[in-house]
Amino acid sequence: MSEEITGILEKVHQILEYGDICDHCLGRLFAKRSFGLTNVERGHALRVAHALAYNIPFAEYEAGNCWVCNDLFDQIPYWAEKAALAAEGIEYETFVIGTRVPPMMSESEEMLWSDLSLENPEPLKSEMNREVGKAVAAITGKRGDPKTPELTIVLNIADDCTELQIASIYFLGRYLKHVRGIPQTHWDCRACKGKGCEQCNFTGKQYPTSVEEEIAKVPVEIFKADAGILHGAGREDIDALCYGTGRPFVMEMSNPKVRTADLRELEEAINKSALPEVEVRLESWSNKKTVEMLKSHKGHKTYRILVSVDDSISLENIQNAVSKLNGAWIAQRTPNRVSHRRADLVRKRQVIGIQVLGVENGLYRLEVVGDSGLYIKELISGDEGRTSPSLSEILAAPAKVTELDVVQVDGL
Image 1 (tube, rainbow, N blue to C red):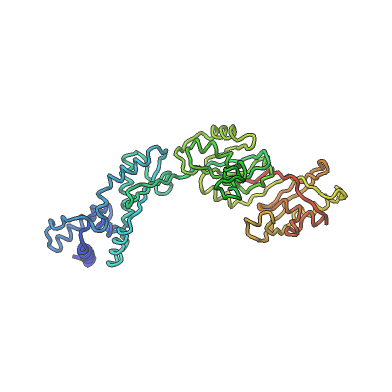
Image 2 (image 1 turned 180 degrees about the vertical axis):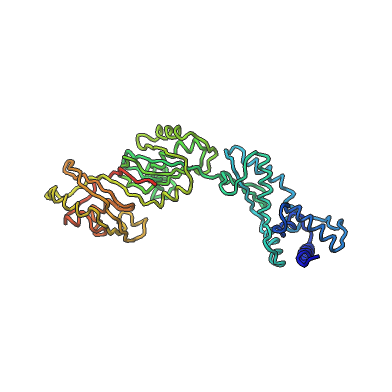
C-alpha cells in the first residue's frame, strides 16, 4: 500500500477506537476523498478497507449507536416528513434546509477533527441539510435552492421541532401623500413607547396612521403577511405633502404565506383603501438589493414652499437674496427639531437651484432643488445660526417656511 492509503487507514483505525461510529459520520470525516460517493458509501468503503488491512472480522463492526450523531441519519425520513408538514399552507417554490445541531454532537465531531488533524471534514449539519433537503424535494415537488430560497426550514434536533423562515416579498413604486399631518412610517407613542396608554387612546401610536400603514394594510391581507415595512427614498416632514412624480419606495411584506398577486390589481386595491390620504403607482416586483440601493441613492429633490418674511422687505430684495443661494453650498448642523434622533454633525449640501415663483396672500412661493439631505426649512430660517448661509441670514430678517411640498424625487 502507498503511504497515503496507509495514513488514511491509520486515521480510520484511530477513529474506530473512539467507539461505535456510523458510516455517515465516518464518511464525513474524509468528505474530500474520492468523488461520486455519498458519505455513507464512503464510510462503508473505509470500514471494509480497514477490516481487510487489519484482518478484522467484519461482523465486529455491527455495533451499537453512533457516539457522534446518536444515529441521527437514520431519522432522515422522519425529519423530511416533519419539514414537509411544517411547510403546508405556505406558498413557495424554492426552499433550503438548515439544522440546529445539539451542542454535544458538535463537540464530539469537533474533538475528532482536532485530535486527528483531519483535513476538510464535512460538518454533520451540512450532510443533514443536504439529505433531508433531497427527501423534502421528493415529497413536496419543490426545488432546493440554497442561494435564494423562498422558505428556510430549520430542523431543531434538540427540541424535536422545526422553525420556518419565510423570505420577504418586495414591490417597488412611488407614493403620493395628499394630506398633511401623517408621518411616513409608524411612530410609537412617546408617552408609553408603544404599549398603549390614555394619551394615545391605547393604540400605542403617536399618530393615528402613516403612509406605511395606509400602503401596507391591503397587501398584508393579500399576502397573509405578518407586517408591511416601507423603505422610502428619504422622507418628507409630517406637515408636508408629496405629489408630482411621488417618492420612490419599496414595500416589504414580512413572513408572507402567499407569494403571488397581479401588480396592477394590487395597485388598484391599495389605492381603493388608501385614498384620499395616500396614492401609489406600482412599478415592479423588487428585492432586498433594491432596498439597499434605494437607501444609499443620493438623488436630487424638488420642493415648493411658502415663505413668510417681514412685510417691509420688497419682492426685489427677496429675489436678490434667493439668487445668492442659487448653486450655493450650505453648511448645516443637525437641526434642533431632529437633534434628539440624529447625530450632532455639520453636513455640506448644495442648493442645485432656487427661484421665486410668485406671491400668494403675502407669502412668497419658492421652488428649491437640493441635494439629498438638504434641510429646506432650515435653509430658509437659518435655525438659530446652525444653517449658513440661509435666506434669513442674507436678508438679515426672520424668514420661515409655512408650507412645504415635495414635487419630485429622483429615482434610482
